Image (cartoon, rainbow, N blue to C red; front, side):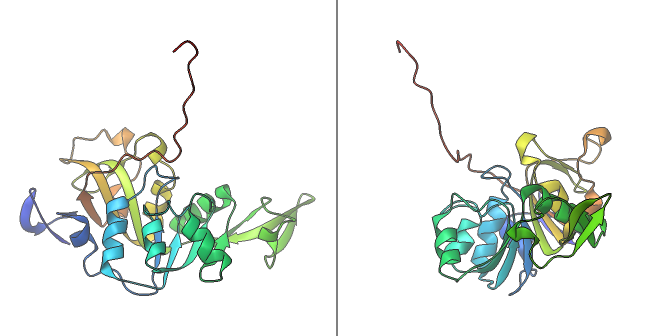
Amino acid sequence: MFGDTEFGEDVLSKIYKDAKSALEGIPKDNMTIMAGGFGLCGLPENLIIALRDSGVKGLTAISNNAGVDGFGLGLLLETRQIKKMVSSYVGENKEFERQYLSGELELEFNPQGTLAERIRAGGAGIPGFYTKTGVGTLVAEGKEHKEFNGETYILETGLKADISLVKAWKADEEGNLIFRKTARNFNPMMATAGAITIVEVEEIVPCGTLDPDQIHTPGIYVDRIVQSTFEKRIENRTVTKRENA
């Protein structure tokens, strides 16, 4: 792939100058996308904006949650570009709630650990696995049940995507990634489960700079990288009133 950046023009590179160019030629209607993040932490927010601006529609979005109104995947809900969400936590977004309750939006609900494991399994080439989570609930309806050692389990399938949109802290020029603290949530698994993985990072460093023992995701999984700036939002601000203040 050819990037056009300060690291060199018209050379074989994974690095792109901005989120729009990093997505160029990839988005298509009715694709399945994965978007990292937990709440507002670790969101590939600039890539999501670029995806919105591409105008694609009919998307199936795999993500722990749908951001909030006006931010993250909430932007794609506002423009009706998402037809189906595969999610775990569906709170904090009134437009998500409105579309789901009115029948405008499909929802495949997953327990949080099950969603994480489905993504990991997809990236590892595992087509399915059995879990006890969800047995006896609506989650288990229509799924294969099987007993192991006298306990009932349900079959869950691995998840893959046409595009994975990932947020990392640092990358080198080959796409080796380091995630920072809570942003190391769904992002590493999603990086392995996309046919094309596009990553936005806070910093790009030369190859050989990162300690190999500290790399969370090897660059073999990463196709395109863009360095971005990010909005540091707080999802729910809580404060404690100090006595005698």
